Image 1: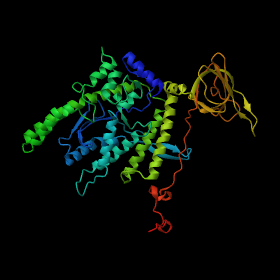
Image 2: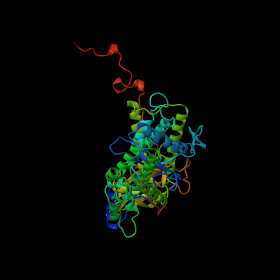
Image 3: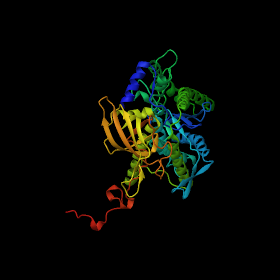
Image 4: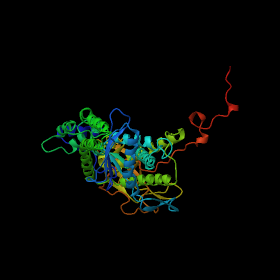
Length: 496
């Protein structure tokens, strides 16, 4: 936990309401997200019990599994869910756009939009990931056949679960994570996994503090859990008798229908409060303007959605059960690059996030007191424009002379530290030499060089492109890591 977030949590306790830790929204929020609130049967490994699914607040469709231990009913649930999810995905594949590649020498196509799934908490993401793993290898023929849409749904759920691991992706979001990314509550990180408690801090009822609202929300008698786990008291005293009544009415259609209706009523009663909280959370997130670089990350989600859709259309196979050594290393490297880029982009978009880096010495803010926009460096083979500016700051400057800095105000321009002169009055003078972002001539265009009086932030964080690493092909990988087996003739001889 950063110092600023710890301070925000302390202020939330003192003020009785959650405190903002962001000035912009750092994720994409679709106009019609598909909200999915799942419930799983207690004591079973990811056995679906029920789900509320829909893309508008008044469009909730309830799916129920009366006997979650019954394999056919579980596959029936998956088929019903596929009948909702797959058409929603196809609705985003109606139009595509051309994207220039190879510096404009070629183009590729991607969909102009992509779907977004919202679940209450990270456990909901785990539920979808496990549901995808249990269905994507099913077959529509042979032993225990399923509806053809079931394995297709499993592949798409696996895709969304994998995108959820990608830093900065908005394809599949947990509402608790989305809200606590932008607001700090006065409770622990574990308590922040409970959606009703989080919203109690963010939007407490009149007359209650955030702590009081969160405590009330943690009472399952008034606020059911946000799933997929259910309340044990509900399981033992209400759900179990209803499921037993449904099972006992096997030979009486009228009694079975009545038992099913009662089961539906109980489960809808459990899911509806969370459904309403989900849309309250969406409304709170919409109050924040999107960050400048959010659209670029959403374009990455659209690229991934397009690529997977083309893979499915081409008859490609489902995702493997586990990655090989090379694939795992490539995936880890890709996630690490995305995490680094996401952290820099958030800091560039949001001064509150950048403030955390100012506390650690990775950035400072100062006022321009001197500027020489016409300075030319003629020490090389040809003269080049190298303006210099002087900033005065009251913040500690921990960057060494010669370090390369960048400013969020001019991300395409680099600044090299030339001098750092601490003053006796607690102020520090920093002289920077600028390069890039000023054209190719010896005269800087207006606005490309900071002017006197301008207040700027400079940081060691760079938003520059991060090149991909080089990895061996599977054929070049040692046999100990999944590559081809060693040549028997070169294998060491073992003494008998």
